[in-house]
Image 1 (cartoon, rainbow, N blue to C red):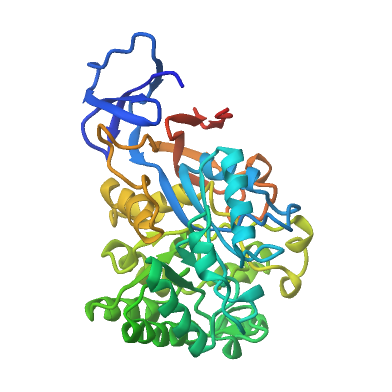
Image 2 (tube, one colour):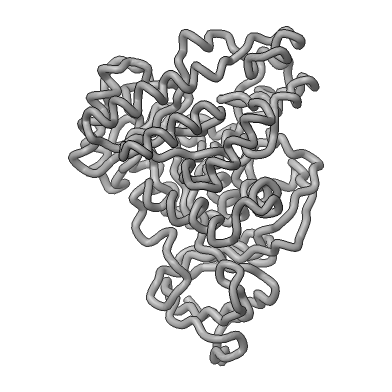
Length: 433
């Protein structure tokens, strides 16, 4: 790989510097204009903020089995365009990623694509059926080195299985990432439960369905002294439960999606299925509580829950439509709108919630580090002054189900560098091989 000099970048919004990359490492960070650029490829980063490459704890890449919606290749290309240098691929594929063989297949597909690092998430139960624990140890010992396990899309609602899984992953410092949804309280649910769901004639999805599972699981985690991660927190009550658990020293972490930081259930008035998601969009009060929780560290990470679906699964009536939204390419901009432009997070905070803490939760070595000599060269260069219009046909994903179509968003990823390889240059994805 040629030597690369990133000139005039502002790490975490600080003073402009030149970042010298040789191979897959940062070898020097010097004052702007002082690096020797002779014989090197230069990337002009004047006016750009340099951040550690983003790490997503919650990505649906759909392969194997649903390549009509997304592939590891297309999904990781979208990730690179969104500034991500590592994504965690969820287990609800076809076949389910509940064996060492399937997680290794996903891991190798990521290696071949080379857009970013792919860390498979293993299923907690066989076939996501919630009845028998999957091969957690075998997946952890595989080449994929799985450390996060989740039945995402379904809740591990059996308390005995959840307890056993929490106990089992302690042996290899793993964590259970719970999709907190009490199934009996959400049968046939279509949107957030409230006055609006009654007005629209759509079955309500109560906040307590999420909160009851979180309350149970933090107590189980405390009982067995294990590690719990709560997926896509969506209610104010959930934030308070996680805040209480952390105050008691319980080893729980949590994530929030960009769309739950910005969008509300009022969008369901349109009956547009692009706003149908699991968990559902909640109230403005919930949105504000989630923002506060992310700002004060109660919520550890932003995770996209990138959920691609083919056109026929979204271009239909609300009740028949699939749950889920695209998220990889828009995540940074939504965080800028909801957290940076509101003064709730600075660039240090963005790096912490989108890079450092997600890498720590996923036990990903070499990701989420500082921008310093000797560190792996995973970088995202962003233009905080830019704006762009989200056009579904211009996104890299094979699917088009974005809730932000034709919306103007602030902030743009301009360059992404993964292991010393530029994967995105001037907003355009390029091959690394």
